[in-house]
Length: 177
Picture 1 (cartoon, rainbow, N blue to C red):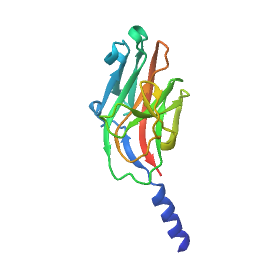
Picture 2 (picture 1 turned 135 degrees about the vertical axis):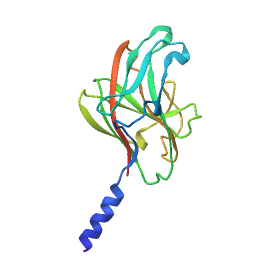
Picture 3 (picture 1 turned 180 degrees about the vertical axis):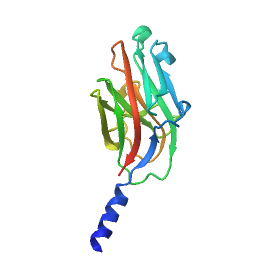
Picture 4 (picture 1 turned 60 degrees about the horizontal axis):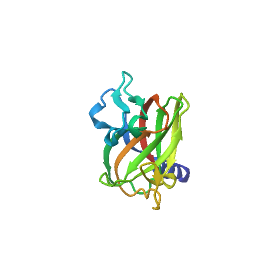
């Protein structure tokens, strides 16, 4: 009986909280693109849901007019997430590095970001809140790392400083304790 109670406690403390789980009923309009065109650049990202029900963030990075990034974002406004310490994302990239980003307040100019390398295969990546420094326009800010208290926006960004095509397939984003 004690062993069963112990397992129950472990399972309850390990239960993830889903931020977004893509499927065939997912809405493309839940996500929006923000490219370097806001600063005069010419990069072009798109977002869609494929036949398998996964999110597809793809496009082309252009360095024209001081451009060089594309991002996709989702307003999430997460509440009751105390005790969680990291994000777990399941993705299939194209071999490029990407950033996973979160904003405590979507009106803030800064985000908290962690860069991860994709392999070209499906993979699950854990990102600890403590490994997400505050950033603005590609520069780390003199602020504490992501405190994990509020989440109003999550997203992905590619900004490799290379003109190129890109594609990131997204299956799920969850919080883990």
